[in-house]
Image (tube, rainbow, N blue to C red):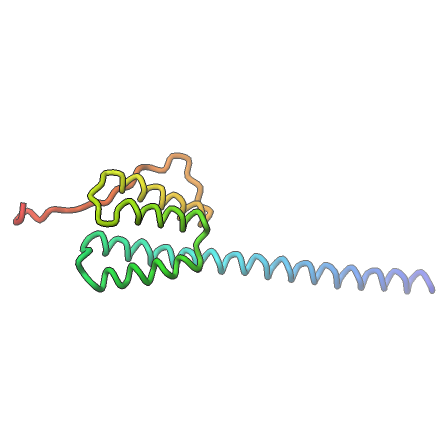
Length: 136
C-alpha cells in the first residue's frame, strides 16, 4: 500500500468517526432537552391543578384535573419529586396544618432542582388565600 492510500483511508475513517460521534451527541442532547421540556410542561400543569384544587377543593373538576396531573407526574418526575409530592399530600389531606407551607416549599424546590434550576436561597412559599371583603 502506498502512503497516499493509507493517509486517505485514515482520513476517511476519522471523518466517519467524527460524524458518528457528533450525531450521537446531538441526538443525546436533543433527547435531554425534550425530556426537560416535557417535565416542565407537566410540572406547570401540576402546579396549576394544585392551585385550583387548593382554591376550591369542593369542585369536582379541580379534583379531577389535579388527579390527572398527579398521575402524569408519576410517569415523568424524578424520585425526589414524587416523594415530596406524596409527603405533601399526606400532610395536607383533610388537615388544617401550618406545616403544609413547609411541604409545599420542599415540593417546589424539588421541582426546580429536577428542571436544573439551582437556587441558593429559595424563599418559603405558602398557600395564599384571599378573603372576600363582603364575606369578612
